[in-house]
Length: 215
Image 1: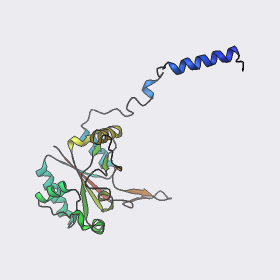
Image 2: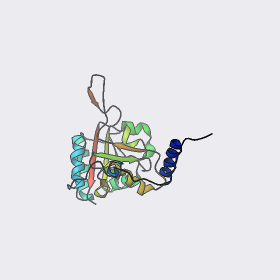
Image 3: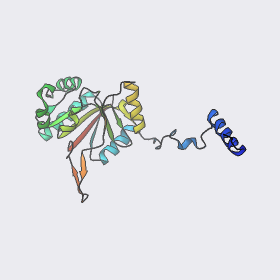
């Protein structure tokens, strides 16, 4: 089959283009730069403001001693009697503070009937006020979802600025063994019906607390 000179010229240009890479004309628009520029504010403050704006309840603790005092005050004020904790390290931490915690072998029914559950987190995303949780944590998939109140204990070193930083945090921690579930919890569970009436606590906890320890 004979190819016309004009068609041959086009094919040559295509072959050349495929063999030689061409620089992107607008490299900054191809996802190589962050969409949101990090502010100069302290990340813990940025998170606290965003988290509180979403009806989350934030508490900053200078150390473990202050964490114990604030947790005890909250439990006494709310008259909670059953605190569900799957994470062994956190359960030992609370026991040392004099806060009795239910063990995970107490079952799913106990989790649903408890006053509150306590977990850690993978990291906190400051810009959106989001807690990043995963199945890789000892708390598992259900502890932060089925309890009426979710309490998260985190350290200042776990706060990152944006979602991409949170994903990088997960990748750096787990490498190629990413947990089967990574969830982004942004404030209490809320949904809206067809009339746009907002209802809190339908598909998850009605209240969410974050205690950030400066350590």
